[in-house]
Picture 1: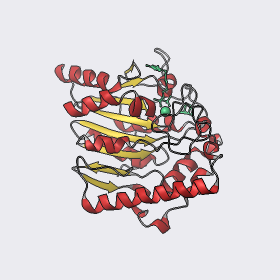
Picture 2: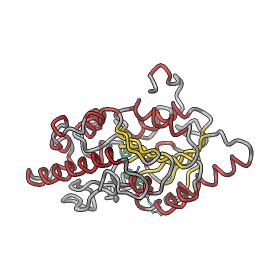
Picture 3: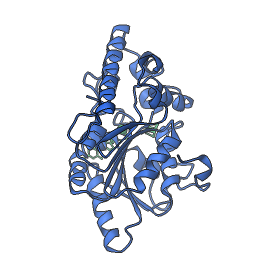
Length: 308
Ligand SMILES: Cc1ncc(C[n+]2csc(CCOP(=O)(O)OP(=O)(O)O)c2C)c(N)n1
Ligand code: SF4
Ligand SMILES: [Mg+2]
């Protein structure tokens, strides 16, 4: 496990950038770069991260970063990886860093193709569960019940389970993480750096204006997402699921906090009545039952993931 002492002291993601106060995405990118180090190149499609990183020569990111078109993160990373390999610099970490809209919706075909080809890069989807940069429109990663500007009474459809889709591709490594558990995230970035092929890491990054909670509560909201079991921390490798961090202790339903504790922290779920919250709790319990089966059976390539 990565310890605080091991983390580099210098910052590769600089303060004074354009993120909103309390942005958990900026915490995730800061932590990821502390592990990745300076021998890293990134590609970032249109999203909040592109705005936060800003333009040369005033960029907040201290590693070379190529902004690319919304749908093109995985295709761009494929080209960057091939070019570095051919020029004898294959040890440089190539990272595609994209939002949930750029991953679950518009970028998924490029990501799927790169996974099939076995391209060598780390793909990070930071998931603030909507198109935040353009004003909180629903994405396919927006969870059921969450209100957005395109679903004012709450989204009806369930959240698309992209980590499970990536596991079904049989890539060498899939992990979920949460910005509120930075050392767990650091572990997963470190492990991904040691593996060849396409590594997929999906990070939950709470967003104060989009989720509508006070700016100082981002870590609390992220922690509650995990402690209620709404967001499950795990790794998938060699066809096997492993729970990580606090999620390891949450298979037993009685140890999970009620989902309502998480939903009631956020204005985006404020329109839900008790019956709808109870239904979402039932769906969450079913998701955990599916995870329990998978942990027992060592579900591998082609089988549904924990979001089934
Ligand atoms: C082809 C195309 N369609 C739409 C846009 C406008 N656009 C820019 S960023 C963005 C939202 C991105 O959402 P997400 O990937 O979830 O990242 P976030 O903004 O939430 O960080 C949209 C719709 C665009 N740049 N290109
Ligand atoms: S809208 Fe949300 S994700 Fe985007 S910069 Fe602001 S807090 Fe961060
Ligand atoms: Mg988003």
